[in-house]
Length: 229
Image 1: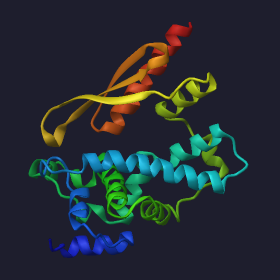
Image 2 (image 1 turned 135 degrees about the vertical axis):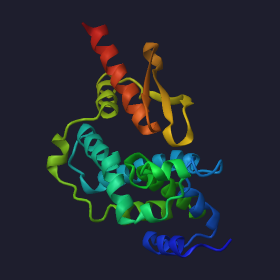
Image 3 (image 1 turned 180 degrees about the horizontal axis):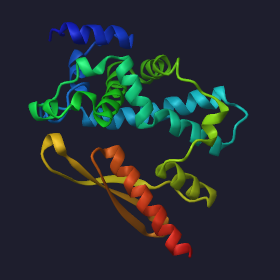
């Protein structure tokens, strides 16, 4: 395939020349544009991103505890940070959206752009392996400040639940998308949060998979508080 000028420029900004250029195009394709969209790449990229940032912090903050590292990582991989990275990459100019999503301002929607950043990381991983994807993550985050104040930042529900479980030597929760509803440009994700060792499951709704997971984690935290009272 022949890349558009916009995707060629994006490739330059990423610092990675794709052997399989289809992966690059898919990474910036929202489900409202095509059935061949970026959600599976986003799923993969999310894991690669978390591992890469964890490895980076493990070496950079070698005197911090597991809980401190988890909180810093949560600050770095949260939607707001990825949204800013998306603008640094100029993703709004190349993201492929359906007409309805375009009319509603989807090219500047934080969830869509943050998911596209993760999809790009997943695409690089498939194209060239973990080292290339890790190198991309380090390039993306090279100007993002990492400082002690981040450790005291307010915890999102997923981080708070993770720390609650780790403090009790329990396995981390499993998040699963159980249903999606609505038109492609106005989808709602229903996500289940399962703690199998405790036999507990809670549901959450969000306009992205990430938001649904946070809602499910928040519901689980409330369930645990009631159970403990």
